Structures are given as C-alpha cells and as structure tokens.
Image (tube, rainbow, N blue to C red; front, top):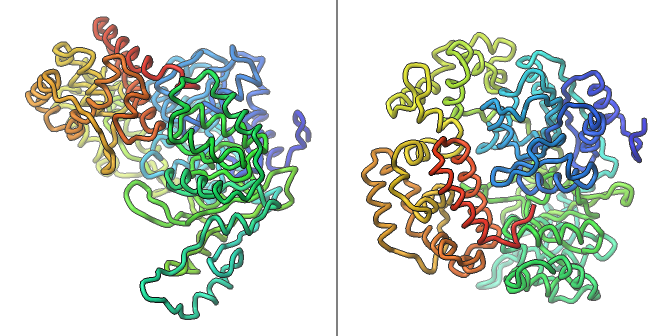
Length: 634
C-alpha cells in the first residue's frame, strides 16, 4: 500500500485499516520506524471534512516543531497552536498543543474540543513518568466518548493491556498495532579507555585483571575525544548524548580544539544568517560564542538551556546533514525526527531531579533509536562509554539488550481534578469516573468496577474536606472561589486566595509579577542572583502574605526576594539580557520561567470575571513579552 511518497510497512497498513474502521489505535514500534506517517494519514484523511484533529506532544519544543511542520504542509490558516503561554488560531482545523493543555481542556469541557475526530498522543509512554504521567491518563479518561485516539509510542511490552483499558472505559474498539522490526537495525557497542570500541564481554575480561594503580593516579576514564577519533568520518554524523547541558557545551569546545575536521566557513555564515533579525545581545551570549568556535568544523551542542531560535538554527543545520558531531541532552530524542549514523552515550546514569540512577531500558532505546538513517544507512551504531570501576555487566545488559519496561499508571488526584469533578459531575458520576483510572484497571483488571468505595474515594474525600474547610466547596457544589480555582492548573489554592478574594486589590503589577514568579520558580542550590531589591513594595507584599492563613504557609514565597532579581529589571524597562546578567541562569532556563509566568497569567485571566484584574494582568503580560522581544519564537 502506498501513501503519498511512502510504501507503507505492514504495521502502518494495519493501523491505517483500523483508522478507516473508525477505531482508536495504540501503536507500539521502535523509535524511527515511521509512526508519525500514521498521524499524517489521519490529518490527510480529514483535511476536507468539518471535523477537527488535535495533535498533542509531551514537551513544548516538539509542539512548536509540529506546528511549524503542519503549517508548512497544510497552510497557516488551517493550523493552530496552544502551549499555555501562547495561543495561535485556536479554532483551526488542526490544533497542536502540549498534552497538559489538552488535559486541562478535556477536564473543564472546553468548547474547542467539540467536533474533534481524533486526538493524536505522541510519545504516549510518558504515562510512565512519575511526575507527569497522570496527565496522559486523565487526558484519556476525560475525553468525550465520541473522540478516537491514536497513541504513538516507542516499544511498550504491555501495549495490549493499555489498549484494553481504553476500550473498557471508552466503549469502542481499540486496535493494538505492534512492530518490533527496525528498517535500519541497531548494533550495540561499548567503549573502554584501553580496548576502544568493543563488546561487553571483552570489557568484562579486561576488568577482571587487577589494575595496578600508580600513587595518586585515578583509574583512567574513557575519553569522548578518543571515541570520536576511533569512529572516524565513516561513522558520522554522530549524536553524542550527555545528561549535563554544561558538559555538552564543554565537550563540543574540547572536540573543536582538536582540529580533527576541515573547516567550512559556510556553516558559520548559515548560522549567522538565521540570527540576522535577532537582538545584537544574542551574539554576545556565551553559548553563541562557543558555537561560533565549533560550527566551522561541523561540531555543535543542543539542549533546553539555549534560546529557541538557536535550537531551531542547529536543528536546521543537522537536518541538512551539515553537522558531524552534535552533543545533546535527552530531550533531543523526544519526537524530533533527526537520526544520525551513530549515537553515543557518555554514561548510562542520569540525575532525575532527585537522585542519580541508571537509565531504564525504555529511556535507553528511545535515545539509541536515533541511530541509523532510513534510506541512507544499512545499520545504525550505538556506542556506550564504560567506566570500569562502576561497570556491572548484568546491569548494562539489562538496559541495552531489549526494551522490557512496561508502562505503569502514575495516577494521582490533585486539587484541580477534584474541583472539576465536583463542578461537572454528580457524586455517583465521580465515583464511576475514578473507577476508570488505568491504576484501577492494572490493579483489578476487568473487575475494576468492584473496587470498594471507601478505598477508591479515600484520597478524593481527603481533598474534599480540605476544600470545604477553605470555602472552595459548599455541600456538593463549588463556591465562587472554587469555580475560579477550577480553571487554574498549578498552585490552584494559592492563586485562589490571591485572585478570587480582595487580596490582589492591594497590589500593583510589580507585586503581582513577583507572586507569579515565586510560584513558577523551581529552587536549585546552585542558582545565583547577583542583585536583589529589598524595597518597600516587597516588605508590603510580605506583610500581606503573612496576614493570610493559607498564603503565609506557602513555602514558594520564601524566594520572593530572589525573584526581585528577575522582575525588578523588566518592570523598569530592562530586557531579558539585562536579567541574564543578574543571574547565572542559562538563557533557556530564564525563558522557561518567563513563559510559565505568561502561562499562569493567561490562566488567571481566563478564570476571573473582574475587568480591573484582567487589565492589570494584561499589563503584566505586556511587561514580560516586551522583555523577550525578538527572541521568543514559536
């Protein structure tokens, strides 16, 4: 079967047939096998009828990329984008959004979800994520029963269980399509400081020979420079994955200073052409200076700490096959279809925000799957650097042999979910909905409807008691404060106390922005703020917070003094780059905080009925957007 210029693989044909029968489909197939062709088929199939298609992605960068791709393919008038802080053409035929935004729209019954034929969930295995997995689960639960789903994932060992759960709660057929075949097969190698690129068994044999340590000498570590040299031009381009953004920049610079590759001045010209309309300050950023040093040799780095326009320029160069080695963090492996001849791992350990741990097999194969370019390479090579003192062959085999990680429910009830359940459903309907979680299905199987009510509703009732005590709920109905908070999707009760009472009326835009920043900011021990502003407006705000029973207990407001380093400059007309000089933040990290402030401003604007507050919030938005003029791209 042919579709456009593709000869479809058997698993793609199977999925297309299920779509033609108006079924939902769960597709489990290796990274790089062509799952997105199925999504494209759905969009093409419905492009001339009145129904809408929604495409959701796990990260904003992928949503932005998909928006650009679809706008180019189907025309800007037919494509919209919603990412919380940004709304473009929300009534469009094809609507791209982050999965969080879709979940929020589904649970509140947003009118923009009427007349939707399919929701495409890219990277559905994110349901496994301990922090965010509940978003995907709730997205399915709260979708209309008329909607069909296309769930795309890297290999899921329990994909049938997941599909059966959707079928059980949505009462329509759900087809499971599984492919384990890779058109470009992977070869897995390992790199040792002494043996070079080799097999696990040979490293195990060498590691069994006692190492004679010279006085004061550490055990030798494998070196990325030697690995690149051993790969040679024939194994490039290479994506070199490291879980530290700073290390990606450092290693690119180290490689460039080896002068292994001939220089090509055209690469730097193309990069600078991409920045032609950007503010002059972009050229003075440390990351830009390093790129200007490395790019002539086809060496670069890519991570979330870069400006969006820099990342887009590098993706463009890599997509054209002009880069030899790109040092990247794991976000580059999410959704972005940019394979290479070789993928290298600096390590199989990462910091997950809480602890250092080994990758699981799903994470490894998600990244490794970027090796091998369809139609170009007959094989894709994956090379993992091994450090002998921490080397355990059985651990490495478990991670790198095959993807055995099943998806598990991460369902958890939060305040926003409870508020929206109360607002839109009767107590009987709420109990039925809570029985529909993937958690219930995994624990009780087809008998999920037999769970004892006291077990099922324990967490719900605990949250409900707190909401009643704080006057968000009265009886079984939301108060005005509760209705406001139902439209807020982070720190609901703090925003409720600030903006659905008279609290905000004692504040100006500067103080409001400080509160937004403190609630958006994620504390890190190594964050530095060079100049803060301990002024009367801050003291007044702290005094007001202390007088409120709920807000006085909010730990996030302990960072208000630090937040003056971010908000004071832009409130007084300074730019994003002035703020950067006042911190040690990477530029992408500062953009993230500012975009989260914009997201929360939009949520409060949508929730409030007070035109005076709306006007103040519009002013707040203008202050933040003005500071990012010229650098904040879709």
